[in-house]
Image: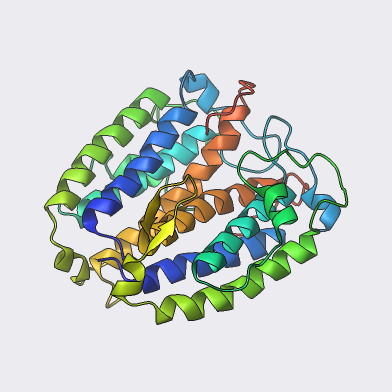
Length: 162
Length: 162
């Protein structure tokens, strides 16, 4: 079996990379649009935070964001094309990401084989085990974390973070 | 938390997404450069395929790319800015990715769960287990897989694949 620690390491790495890719950027920077079809940094980070909320709920912890923000950034939601009252600022997103990490770490370390085998409602209706659920959402988060590398560069910083 | 077979399927998801993001694209498309700092699709896919060599060798299989090409696309290698003999064509990269998935799946399916706990020599340092190495490489591959979404859009297809 892949140990829980490996999943935790991936969540920690995602957080570190997202934070580094946002270093020195402003909320306005997070709204810059890719030159072709694609979501901006604010949407991608909001999407990551929304699904961290999903993870927290599955771990029976307090959600990171409320329903309105969760929906704003969920799969299939409208792209973020301009600033607005429906968004979370870059600073808020990074703070939420950071605060979720400690809770996820604490709860994952408490899980045993029985807990990981418990059923949770899958994103698309049917039930899967908590373990599979966590691995999938870790994958999903890493997928989007890689995108923050390009979205940082839209701001013209022209640097190599990793 | 995740069995060898589930890990094989997880790698398969990345391979499938890379293939989907490349559908209908040609080698020239893979060389299109982002308007800002960042690697093109050819480099990102070459990097993924080079990393698959590391995975296959860790599983006791033969490398598929060879050291020279692996170095061309390795961490810190020069960006791919134009076509050249030092590159692998998009078609070759996709073919190597597909064949690596077959071998990877075969090897992982044959692996007993205890096998993931065995120590391996790796860049991750002493005491690293096969499971830890594979999961890190899975994270790494996923990070870059997410980038193919933006790189597809550089070609102006303007579509939604996932």
